[in-house]
Length: 97
Image (cartoon, rainbow, N blue to C red):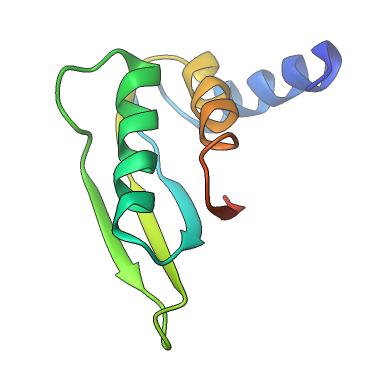
């Protein structure tokens, strides 16, 4: 993300959230057990947490994809963008929001 876009994203996050707060990340990827583990580990590692953040998974009809919802508590807007950047690199990712 270019610096201007990142700055604008940070301003928007700070205007719409009161940190610290829980923040919801959703990732959809290939339906394999390891995908969910990779998503949760990416969030945990990016935040330097010693335990997994709260998460839940749901498999789509037909078992082709799995949706992973992770809801860590974040302390600043910068962490939101850092986690998104990290999640974008997870193998098997199809969609991130």
